[in-house]
Amino acid sequence: MAAIEVERGPLGEGPSPRGGSVLTRGLGGVPPTMLVFTGIISVQFGAALASRLFASTGPAGAVSLRLVFAGLGLLVAWRSTLRIARGALPVVLGYGAVLALMNLSFYEAIDRIPLGMAVTIEFLGPLAVSLIGSRRWIDVVWAIMAGGGVFLLTKSDGPVAWTGILFALAAAVCWAGYILLSAALGERTEGGGGLALAMAFGGVLIVPIGIAEAGAALLNPAALAAGFGVAMLSSVVPYSVELEALRRIPARVFGVLMSLEPAVAALVGVVMLDQLLRPAQWAGVACVAAASAGATRTDSPEGRK
Image 1 (cartoon, helix red, strand yellow):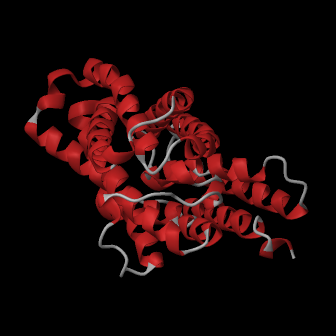
Image 2 (cartoon, helix red, strand yellow):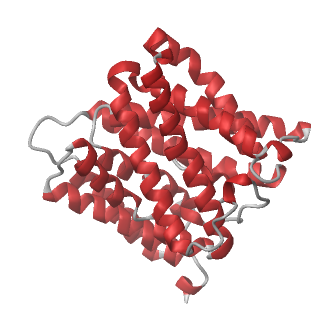
């Protein structure tokens, strides 16, 4: 998943990122909508590349390589903001742990079910955070639509890999926790320093699991190169482009654009992984994406009129 959620709330709502780094220089002339789409496409291509690593490293090994390389990259990029207050340390460590578990669950999911299905189910996490506690009738519609979408996703010609669906649901739960911790991290740290430290800590937590699963395969030059590519595509590139986009467009608009991610994931699965979905499953992707966009749109002051 893209790292930008550190500075925004559910489905794109929340405070904008603060500070800057070498990652965001030179992006000022690119339209913000193009930046968002670039981030979405980069994340999904990164996930597809990671899935091709599974044969040699397994999901845990691929996650280890991604978090280690992404952590190192972000530590370098945000080295000027790495000092944090002692009171922020528990938030940073908790955030890193949730980040690691979320990515591990997601990679375990895409090892078992199509990429588009996994991303769509994972989107239930931020959607749930957006809807919980709401008393507006329209949010009931979005919840029912999302539930119907997940039901359609399980329609398959063959046996459904329920373990993959459960891992995707676990990733959704972690994403919800990730969002809730984001607000605290944004309040207690400046720029991307907190995220960089959290990413590095998540890598430290996952590496022993990756070593247990992949062993010496993690040091294979091809695996290291692919892991570096996954880290850049899935974390560093989307973080930088989305960071710049959030400075220039309202968070609500950003959230609506991000709701296209399940559909993009399904398309990338078709193009890169030959993962064909049935018409009913495409309808499920559309339902969850529409529910995400609707919940984001109606959560704004304009949407309540």
